[in-house]
Amino acid sequence: MKQSLNCLLLAGLVLLLSACGFHLRGLGGSVKELPFSTMYLEAANTGIEADLRTVLARNSKLTLLPAAKQAQAVVTVLNENQSKDILTINASGKISEYQLTYTATVRVVLGGVPIEPDMEVSVRRSMNYSDSAVLGKEQEEGLLWADARRDAAEQIVRRLAYLKVPAVSPAGPQSLKPANAVTQP
Image (tube, rainbow, N blue to C red; front, side, top):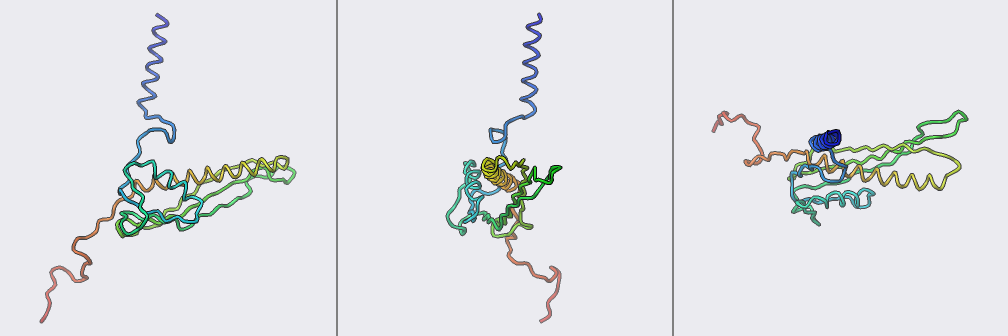
């Protein structure tokens, strides 16, 4: 009796966890589709380019094009910045923790219409510091910067999925005159 009650409780717990939609980041889960199927990525000479291409390659319905002319969306990385600030100082006046901040600014053009304002993604990481392990801390800092770029790339793609495609008027440019205005000959 007690064993069957334990099995029933375990089965109920498993069903409860699966019903809440729990999944590990990057593994499964529902990913919102991008509102475009072709894209041109302009991110040359930036550290985030490879991470953006990796995240975008996961989407099987998206085609990255080599030229901007045929693309429905053009994503341009305007700026990326890394800053390392002192977060805490110990009692003897030595640095004990840094805050690493990675910021990327991205401009998106959908169907020839720029989406305003430009996207800005900021990722922060804290890093403990010790003078006795300088070489190890340099390696840790490099890993934290790489992780921050990956996280920023994933945030950019998630934000791209929620963009609304701007409605383009089929009549072309609109006149400033009211529709019921009478023209004098």
